[in-house]
Length: 76
Image 1 (cartoon, rainbow, N blue to C red):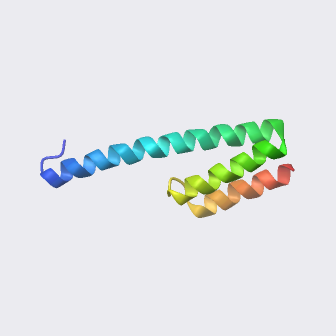
Image 2 (image 1 turned 45 degrees about the horizontal axis):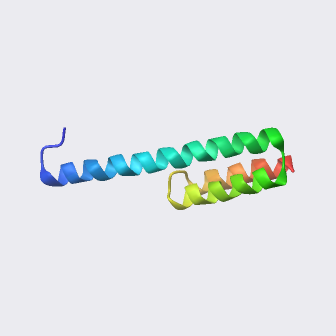
């Protein structure tokens, strides 16, 4: 457990960021799975959008985002 005041504050921030990132990653994984199975244009575009949003909040690296979008664009 953190001892100093700033360490406690940093821990609170880390927990909040972790929960936000986990939600974003889960939504992205579900969207990618759905896009790969249904192969509909709407689902692929939704996965593209979520990929960009997840990369924007830095939950995933921008190159991983590009790689995912490349893989999904081959499905079309």
